[in-house]
Length: 390
View 1 (cartoon, rainbow, N blue to C red):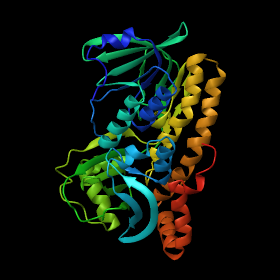
View 2: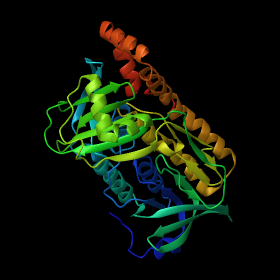
View 3: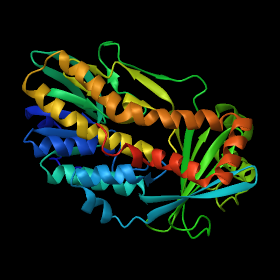
View 4: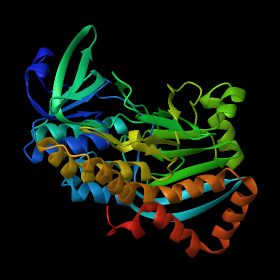
């Protein structure tokens, strides 16, 4: 999907105001925002596009609203993803169904390609299949080594945005930027199953809660079934792989396991829950999953990434014009307001689900007091946070 000249040398010859590493939602939305402000912007991604990602493939109401606010609503709607309106949770053979309107389900291969295309339409350059190494800041610019197979070039930019997902890029020098997994963090795993599997129905997120992880199921724009799981490392070892682990959790929850799990092309992730410190260095900002992550449930991760991208654009514009150390502090405060506040509830829900007796009590309370359960899902959905500083 590259939209730059085939000669990688041209990337080194051009002066860049901003280089964005990672073309997921955070990177592409940020690159588009910078290009719309007139900054000469290069967006690169390590994988060739279109590419798959382990992801729940859900955008909740908050994520949809953030894309609409950025002017990307038509691009999202053009993908034809089914509207989401229900969340069905299974635990120990019982299930509850909760209203969860306003979201949509769409494959990451389609979404990421569309958002990268929107960045290009705004004036950014995009190059996939590029491995980036972050060099030092020197002479008012940050150096980036770009590698395409055996060929390498050095590009320079006034500001660099790191939006590379759970893993940080390599740094030439140790600048102290660390992404550290939380103790006991679960491993992400996912696959996509073609065909009509009957469950869940289109428009419903089904979440199976087990003793050592959870599995989410949702139908995508082409009718296929997206399977995304957060699994204890011990379960992966004892089950012999993600397919058997997912089948075990689905059975514990009382959900029927889809056909083809064992034959599917599974992908995995680094440990999910993690913190990155610091989130900024001279002429560099870290955002999206690369800035820290908490196990999400109904599309919250997409919302965090998109809102962070919108927040970092004006700071990056100022950094490109003139770097000041205070910009790093401003980004930490902005990230706290637009992302960390939203992550705290997911962190609490994840803690509940790891304790079976608390999970059973919460499940029973949700059945008896649906209004309370609805309030929790609305907070996960971002509804009660809309309008706050972001």
